Image (cartoon, rainbow, N blue to C red):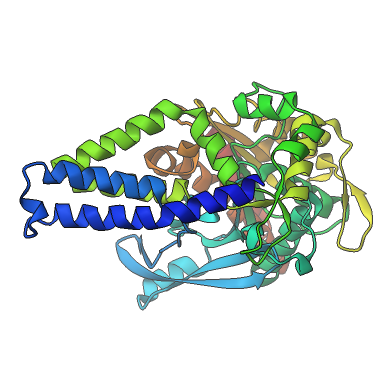
Length: 453
């Protein structure tokens, strides 16, 4: 009943939210009679804040139309390449009339960014995508809101997530020969599982994996998020946070973990910070600080837009990642698309370079949780492994904002480029035996540079 109650409350609030927006515009217009009131600016700001606190936040768009590549404006065309019941694989295709720029970007590495399915939409990684597009061909997983997926599409399990990732990797590999994979937060675990399974079968694996702020081993430095998942039983989660989608949505009847509950949890982690942020927004409206108010709106338009997760996927993630620690314990079995059960063996990965990134102040994935990937991927040579801790960065700072762009991204870029260049050199050597010695020297140099960064 909680989901129905929430939707009823939201529907009742909607007209009041719209009225508050209208009132804000009336009092904010100096040419209107109401706008002549000496307290008009304060009243307008109050109504604006009421509107934003009461409105419904829909899925934002990526909105990436152009990027700057070394001073040249490059057009971006966003398109869906694979449309699955619970996820879309999106590509950001770059176009330019500048011949030199085209030559520069055509041989750049292809990167599959696996976005988290943990409450927010993939657009949370907009800054990640925008930055990566300067030097890479970029694809991203765009997970769908489970309440919009009809029951006829079946259930969605953690195993399905892993199978999706494998399919997307193969799709990008087919286009470019191979690719690089980047996972942010939650998907570090299923991505590692996907690549492990591919390695165990003898398939070609990605050239590199970049894992950022994820719970590879949630036992290390547990955070409030980890403690909640570890201290409550599986039955508690199923009985207290799983609800059926109401009748007014396409996914009516589907069992889900509602996005509004996840959002409530996000806010509850730092309630004073959010209260201060809204109060600062109110004061900025009164002062007419447009830059600050626009920044606030952009952040909360993204932060407040949440999606429902299929119940099976959510409950299995809690059990596998945060309660049984199946990945690090070596007892995680996954059902493939053919129905066959396969054991996840990260040690089987031999040729995929491994880069882990953590934020010094991360309060979602604690210190050492992501770095643990190096312990279980024992088959990857040390020269192909690297760890980086972003000083002063919280969870979001490692993939968005100034710290991401200025401190984290340069390391990600150089790591991917080094192993992309090494692989390219190896391919050239195989096709031209007379040049084998020279590329081999370059490959060794690449490894040395990578290990020193």
